[in-house]
Image 1 (spheres, one colour):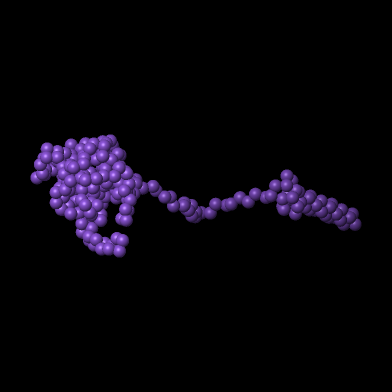
Image 2 (cartoon, one colour; image 1 turned 45 degrees about the vertical axis):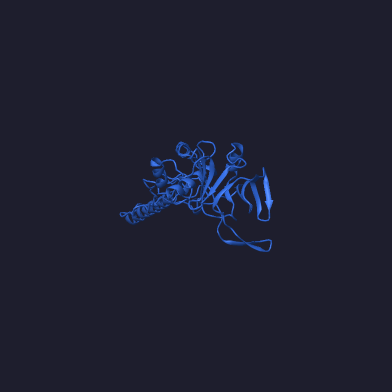
Length: 282
């Protein structure tokens, strides 16, 4: 009986120990498991849980956006006509223009004052030179024109004495002094075509022959065909040398001899065509 009682006591003690050990294990396990609130990031310092990416054994290279590499040389550009190398034209201003003007002046092509600006009078002088040399009369001092200028000589005439000579074939006007060409100007004579004025038909011709200056108007002489600037008349049909705003490289008038308005001012100021002076048209 005593042995049985002792065994029961031992079993009871062991059971108590097992129960105590199990409770202790449960208590310890619960202190290491997070609560639902903490796992959601609401507890603690209220920061959201940080997700840490676990690197994989194979990684893809990062995608780098393509870069635009600037060209090593600038793309070619087309220069405006006024900047074309070797060509001088209206609007240009440079030492080369000054040299051009001096050369034209030395050869007797009238262009007013000499400076470094390529204006309409320089264009008129270049045109006159091109006509004399048999070049395209475009008023542009390109390589061909400038090359011709280098070896050119002053124009000559078959006239003698002092007079104004109008060469219709070449469309130039010469100021002759003592039989030599003192000055050459671009001009535009009659178209040689018919036209109507005041109900009658006329021919736009510049009559060839030897004439004399018989009258002049110091201002605009307005007629049925328009205004003539400071005309100096040499023919009974009302044909004159006069200034005009347009003096093209070809025959364009109704019969008169056009020069620039600035040239006409110079003709008056320097007494180039006094009353009774000779005018030779051919």
